Length: 66
Image (cartoon, rainbow, N blue to C red; front, top):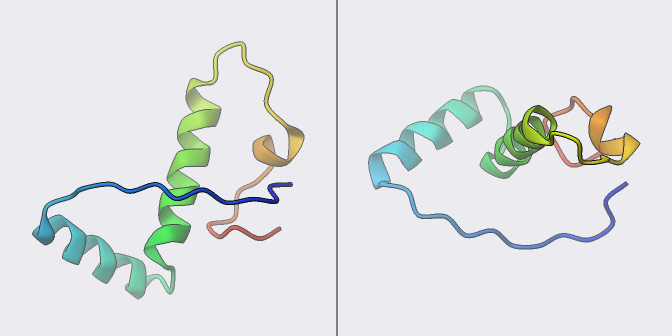
């Protein structure tokens, strides 16, 4: 399992950010939880022949736990 975190800074226009935050809140999720889930999905779908850790392949929760 992951045991360290790293900061990822992105720039997005204010309207998209506001809408994204509203949708996240409506689903009782933080924007960070949703972005982590999207990154995991992208890695799994685009990893090609790369060997992925089992904890990464098997995760489906939106947050960073479990």
